[in-house]
Image (cartoon, rainbow, N blue to C red):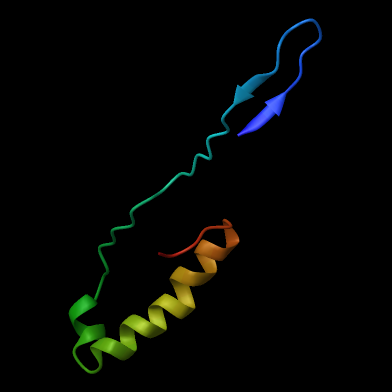
Length: 64
């Protein structure tokens, strides 16, 4: 809590609320099966590092 003093009034307790936006990403990937068949884990890691993470960083976001 933060205590503010106002001129001519008693001290008032004010609670600051931190608000944060959240977004959920869904994607329909063209050629998904072709990309995933040879190496599913490697493909997911490469797409995350090469596409998703740079976009999230550009917009000052985070991946949870």
